[in-house]
Image (tube, rainbow, N blue to C red):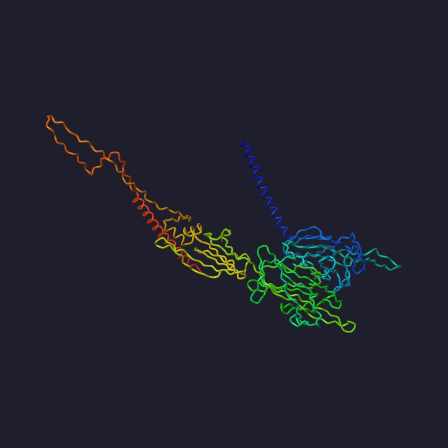
Length: 638
């Protein structure tokens, strides 16, 4: 039996070790999978040497790609979307990288190798520069049908080209789901067998244009706020800013204005719980736990036929800039969306810029999610330029700049602050006590007003407690408190008017422990002490009930039977005179009476007096030790 027991024990230990090792391996795999790189499959098209890379109805060849396209980030593969391979991005954004295979650029003449292509046309697009060693084109689409060019690169296999992380997805793309098409275009040649005409040797070559096409779909799963969710609030209105002035003007829109009487679309916010406003009437949206405050844009017009008029279109603003956000001159393309966030410290962050917003990021008639928002202040502006054809035969174009600009704020609707033990990290409830000190956490509610008061207990010579306030001041997020005492926090939400009060005790003093354990106030604890309660070292309160003296019964009265007179017969016949017996009143002659009970009240009173004197002595001794500790802490107090 002992042998069997030892073997079972060994097997158990081995099994436990194996499980622990497996757990560590799985944990490592999960951690690694949080940031990965996944290859995307290519369709390779071998085209005629002068095809301008037009794919059209051509079918993919069996040729292999000369490089690899990968998508990088915290993501996983998902089910196909409209026949496009799909990737779910679980955190942040994803980036794209293209790497040419080793040895491709060093192939022999007899192999298919890359040569410079001095053309600018690729599949119907015209690049700014010649393709040369190769071109990279990235297109995006929200429906997989209408495509917009986001990246156009030439000479990608040249010495200075860099195709690592050449594109990063945008929040608005992932939130709404986005299709991507990447085209890698290059020209190749290979040497054939030489030919001779008379005595002249001729080198023969064949050529082809190659297009590697990668298509995919990316998205992120969020706790969706429906575009139809209520409450909702429309924000902003169009402004005529003039022309080429950094969208800084403010001109009236009259009947002669091409934008008169119609709007290109509208922004709105939903996913909040309640709306209020600041003194200058800036909207403030209050959110609770679980709320997803979301900004949406609804495009009402066809940007190529505004207000049903083919002579009105959204123009490409090639020299746009924004004076408000200090954005330098660049190509705003077909509308640029700008979002700037300011944190609780009043620090304005770099604006997020979406160029070509109306063409690349929204669809006519659809509600497009712009961004999810947390606490902070926001400024949003959509800058766009309208081209209006007029004059004789509508041959003359005029241009006007417009913007839809607005501000709003988001605040948490709660009124809570969370203290955490400095050593254990455990959350401390109201009236909790700790010897380690604690740290404040405002749970990302950066706009709450918090005041803290620290006081200490002073034990009087009579054993009663008084509270001595040491400071009363504003508190801040992340502040740590370690000195012994009573800390009372008052939290106020200025946007809801709600207040919350919490008390935390620091120290090991028995009276602090008693306040924490019983939830009593100092006055209530003093009242118990006055009644004779004893506070133990662990803070428990022992209440001693007063002993009432037991009532004594008066002695029972007994009736004495008269004693018959005793007569002594004389020896002779002479009559003898007898006397009545005399009873002494001081003599107890009732032999059947119970003995009288002893009165113990004096003994009880004496015992209580001894306990009280001892308690006072202990309290005086504790006060001296406690005051000495406080004086030592005062040296280190702020």
